[in-house]
Amino acid sequence: MFRRQAPNSASPQAACVIGAGISGASTARALAELGWQVTVIDSGHFGASSLPLGLISPHTSKDDGALSQLSRIGMERMHVAMRTYLIEGVDWAPSGVTTYPRTGPVSAAITTWHPDAAWIKPSALTRALLDHPNIQVVRNQRVDALHLDSNTKSWQVQSSGLHLAQAEHVVLAAGPGCLDLCAGVIQQYASVLTPPFDAIRGQVSWGLMAQTTHAPMPSSPINGRGSFVPHVPTPEGEAWFLGSTYDRTHPHMGVTEEDHTFNLNRLAELFPETAKALAPVFDKSVRGWVGVRCTLHDRLPLMGSVSEAPAGLWINSAMGSRGLTLGLLCSEILVAQMTGHPSPVEDHLIRAISSHRFAEKARTKMQRQ
Ligand SMILES: Cc1cc2nc3c(=O)[nH]c(=O)nc-3n(C[C@H](O)[C@H](O)[C@H](O)COP(=O)(O)OP(=O)(O)OC[C@H]3O[C@@H](n4cnc5c(N)ncnc54)[C@H](O)[C@@H]3O)c2cc1C
Image (cartoon, rainbow, N blue to C red):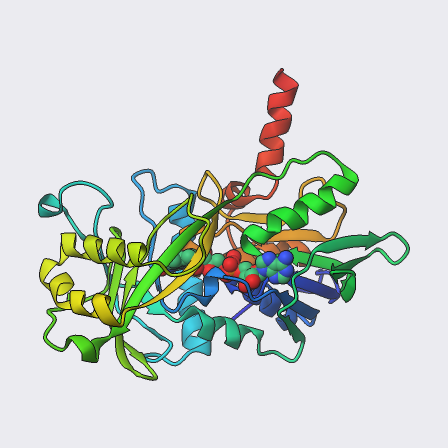
C-alpha cells in the first residue's frame, strides 16, 4: 500500500524509529517497503495506540480547513490498510458513525451520518505494520539520549547509557515523549524552538454485552459528544466501548471511578435508557483503559525534520484525538520527504503540519520586535 521506490529517490538507508504506536509503526513500514532497514524502539508506556478500540471518522469544519482535508485523505489510506492487513468484523468494521454536535441541547441536536467511518482495534494494525523482514522491534526500552557521531554522521540511540541502535536517520514518533528527546538534542546545538505539547489524559469504559442483554443499544456507533460502540467482537464475547474523558490537568494514569461515572453520565444525556441498563455493570465489573493524547494548540500533527537539529532527525507526532485517521497519511508524507519521493498531498497541507511552522512563526515574531 505504500509507495514503491522512484528512480531518482535516495537509496535505502538505516533508520531508527522511536515509538511503536500508529505513527511509528506506519513510518517504519513505509521505509521498510522501500528497502530501508528499520529499528523500532518502544518504552511500552501508556501509548495512545494501545487504545482497545477507536473510531476512524472524518473531521468536518465550515471552512473545510487543513484538518478536515487531511482527515478525508487519511481515511482513504486507513481503509486500504485495514482491508490489506486486518480481518474485517474482528479487528475493524466499516460500521459508519452517527456524529453529534459537541455542545448545545441534545433535544435540538442535528446529527450527521458518516457512512465511511469505521471502528478499529489499533493494536492489531500496529502489530501487522511492524511485521516485516526489514523491521526489528526493541520493546520496553525508554530512549533517553540521542547523539550525532560527527565521524560516521550517524545517530547513536541510547537508554541509561546503553547503546540501543545507530542509524543515519532517527524518527521521533514517541507521542509526548518527543518533547524531551527534541529538547535534549536541540540544546546541544541551538535555541529551543520546539512547540510545547499538551498531554491529554483519556479514560475509556467498557464491558461485555452478555451482562446487559436487555439494554436498548443505538443502531450504529456514535461520536462527537463522547463515543459509544456496541457489538464489538472480543475473545470473551461481544463488548461495548464507551469513551472518553478529556483531561489536561489529571496526572494520574490509573483507571478512576470518577471517570467511569463521567463517561456513563455523558451517555445518559444521549441515550438515557442504555445508560440506565449499563449502570449495574458500572457498579460491579466495568473495565477501563487510560492513555494520553499528544496534541498541539493548533490541533494539527507535527511532521518533518526537527527544527534547528542536525540532518537526519525527524518527527511524526502530535496526532491529538485523530491519530487513527491521520497517522498513516502523515507517515507517508514524512517518508516522501525523507526519501525524496513526490508528496502524496498538496503543498498547503504539508505547510499546515510542517514541523517548521512554529520555528518560522517565532523567527518572524523576533524579526518584527
Ligand atoms: C482515550 C483516547 C481515545 C482516543 N480515541 C481515538 C479515536 O477514536 N480515534 C482516533 O483517531 N484517535 C483516538 N485517540 C488518539 C489516538 O489514539 C492517538 O492520536 C494515536 O494513537 C497516536 O499515535 P502515536 O503513534 O503518535 O503515539 P502513541 O500511540 O502514544 O505512541 C507513542 C509511543 O512512544 C513510546 N515512547 C514514548 N516515549 C518514548 C521514549 N523516550 N523511548 C521509547 N519509546 C517511547 C510510547 O511507549 C508509545 O508506545 C484516542 C486517544 C485516547 C487517549
